[in-house]
Length: 82
Image (cartoon, rainbow, N blue to C red; front, side, top):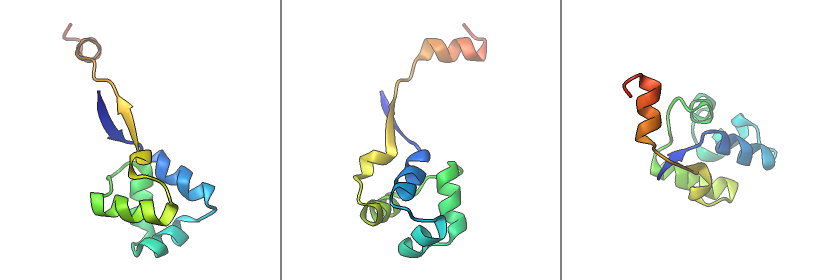
C-alpha cells in the first residue's frame, strides 16, 4: 500500500470553508493559477505548501492523501504483458 496525493481534497476542504481559489491563494501567498494546478492534480504541492494549506484550512496534512494498493498483476493485465 502507498499514499498518494488526492487533489480533490484541497478543493473539498476549500469549498467547505466557503473560500474561493483566489481567497485561499491570497491566504497562502501564492497565485490562483498555482492553486488551480494543485486542485487539478497537474502538480502536487511541496511539503512546506501542504503545511501552509493545513494551517489555512485547519485539516491534517494526511487529509490530502489516500491509500492506494499497488497490484502488479492488474498492472500487467492493463499493459497487456500478462
